[in-house]
Length: 68
Image (cartoon, rainbow, N blue to C red):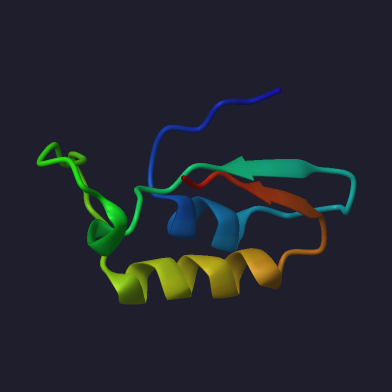
């Protein structure tokens, strides 16, 4: 297992997937779904979520996305 703390878009776009990986992705929740006033250090816009999901869908490996 390898934990990467950084920009998922940059890392995943450059990562040479071989097909045996499992990528666990825990992006910030959509702001429109959060009832709390607490915010993430780096919030994602709706367009950021769409871009991440498009990137994840194109990877030739298993992907698990965490959500609320």
